[in-house]
Length: 441
Image (cartoon, rainbow, N blue to C red):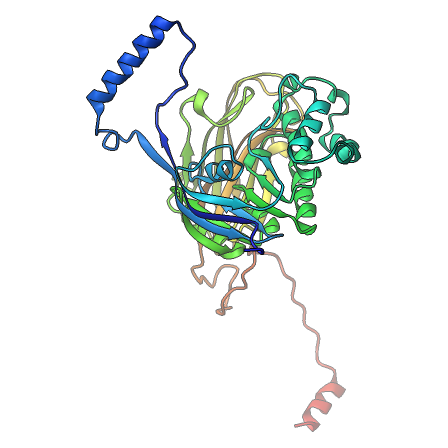
């Protein structure tokens, strides 16, 4: 047991759908509400399960983590990833099972977790360090490094209730990563904020991992998971579906998620992914006839199409696609800013449809996932993004008229298979060389 820093046994968590916090009201209203609730309970007694009012966010989850391991937690939205980290962070209690943690834990689970809104950034740094069991001198030694990493020098003495979500995240991550926790729990909160800071955070986590500290990392970004993690736990429906080496589990996860997913549509602006500037509307993979497809041959061209709403004017926006294969390897990224009529200019509000044509004889055979989003180039902010939004399969047909030609052996497992132009020249064989070859026979 000395070689285990995190141990979970049969962790399960049940929630009741629709339960709300009691409002503040008068004594008369409180009594009336209690009587009403009692009558409703009598009327619905025994029907909770039938009505589906209770759900298991986690079901019998067991695992162990050794010191210095970097373990990724992956799964679709609602799989139970955040619930697991909340239990390990002691934010919520399990319904069944238990978890043991040995070491000082820092958690980054949601924007502003652990902050007191009335305190300044400076005061919250000392507050969080004290909660971690650090002395004032230890915190002071790290203070300047934390502030510099968070890039909030001008606002360090401002109450954090006035911070933007990006400032919250920068400070929260800087505190969690720099105050020397023995165990770091990080949720997908890094998806908030600008692209450059996301890269900065991933680099810092790599440094923390190289120092031998333990990390549990929840993310939908398979490239980041593969770069940081030695092992992955895949949650689905609250249970562990697969656990093992990162590359193997990530490959199965991506293949599992890509089936029959050639189109995603969001019809309702308020619930569509995005912020007050941009909301995503649709993404699809199309063949040459304009039909949605989930499978293409290596010879076929295909079109990636996205639609999005621009709600707020005054922003210079770029739309982008990022493509990955089933191992999480980044194939390429493409941005519209070279061809867009709004290149370098603010876009007026409206519905935008953009298409990117990928030629045939480009992909290798693979399961491919597409991440798409809209960013503000000036402010380096991601306004809307869906990771692994859609997927499609590229199939090798052994067509001799394509890149393969007469090459019938298995194609190397490379990311792409472009049809490139070759030149072939011939010169006559030197006479002396031919005589030497003849004499050696």
